[in-house]
Length: 448
Image (cartoon, rainbow, N blue to C red; front, side, top):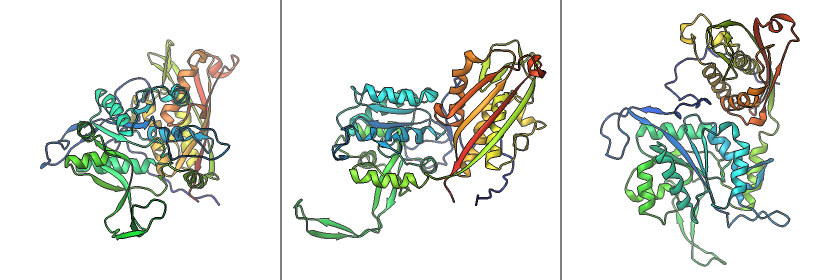
């Protein structure tokens, strides 16, 4: 039986709780205004500081402890396929889904042209937020520091570091870490309290004996991501090159590091046995609840208006008439998503009599709708959409429209299909009086 999802109130226009997704036609990456309240030490972000958070994924290593076994090709663990996708692709997708992050920097080995090509192809729609740098070093610390300096040069004052081999990190966990660190004004990491009894072994590796039982009450298992002020992390890694994670370097500086509860599913692919555990957790969502929604919109063509289709400005002397920017395609997709999730329609959430929405960029409306979908544990599987217009011809804009849609929807380009049709001179579209759009959306929910 399908879950019944309660009807939400109209989506709020306020954006104070989270930054909007970076828009595909320029503009700064997302920022957060942090307002701390007095008493901060010198290295803590001060009140009304404009915060820009970038992510760094060190992916230059090979993973010496990872051996998938006989018959498997020898390759770095981040390129091992998990459920038909390379581990690193899943990891990058997870970070790009977090709109509070500006740039996502992937640091590869200098010779890893194949990895660069894979990521460039898979994430062509998000090229404005994804940066790939083949400048990784022999050690994790070297790769992190290289990516950190690039992020800092690009305006980041906070940097989140995440293992390339932790593909199942959730958006909720990342946002929880960001919120806690910014609220407290210093860095932090995800981790899990130790629940098993911990034993320290004697030094004999082949025949270990228990040397000591360690109280577990204050022990945590460190995870990534780990988030710190960029300048402090640069200083710490330069001063303490022997550390095994970023938090250890910050600790040596004497800075506080907050522990934020992570998730059991945030497993790092280290040994071959981890593949089975990751696959089991991934397969928990292999048979999700699916829903389909349909959307339709139409607007009249009039002079004196810009023509926006799918978030892309079309060169045409007429534009669409509407309360917002009248992007007929984005409105149809928004309606399709709301319908699939049982959340009403676009007019309920963004009424055309409300002055808040006058002239608004429809990408904002779509982004808020995607937020609502995700808050109800739905994920967008694919979009199929059609624009019907006798003129202008939209084929030259097809790739730009697909890129724009994929970025707004936070899904891969391959999950977006766009078609443009004429009306063979029939009807109001055929007479050039207006443009219509239709969309079908499929969403999935693993919660039963």
